[in-house]
Image 1 (cartoon, rainbow over the protein chains, first blue to last red):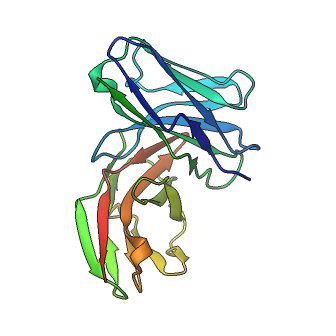
Image 2 (tube, rainbow over the protein chains, first blue to last red):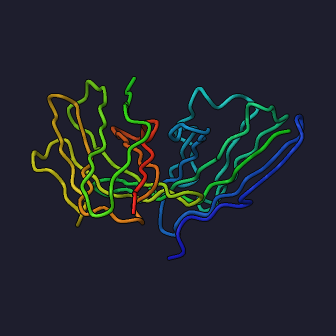
Length: 115
Length: 112
């Protein structure tokens, strides 16, 4: 078990560019979550998948954001036409359902800087 | 909407001493779960301890224990015999249904 991995770990991009992040969950985990974390704040929920189905999206997730989990394994989060306000740490977490707690296991995050 | 409040942005504790981190939450649900996560500097978040709302008994994990007061909607974390490796941001989290809600975190410094 290698845990949740995310790539890249850091991304610097210019405003207006598109970026894509990848998350590889723990292999048997069927739930996958994306969060955004800004400095001094806790993670804010963006969206989650159960297997390949995207079941819920936050109002924080504007039309410029899209997420996929095509085969129920890894997931990608794409941000189009990036803005400076998108600068944040993007966290991925996975969990196994059904379990009592459904606790989440987090990846190291991708830090996005939009210049 | 569910909210989680951590009123202590920063805390410090002497090595080997005990410290308590506070967390309150707002919900109208009766069945939910509560968690404490630790986020060391530049490292990923890891689960410290968890609690089911329907259990009156407070959860414990080695040096970590909680004081869960359901009526008061309070969920504090006690760290006993603090170690240098306990220095981190600590996040309280609430879960009902499918979503997790996190507080703003408490930065814990451990003084040698």
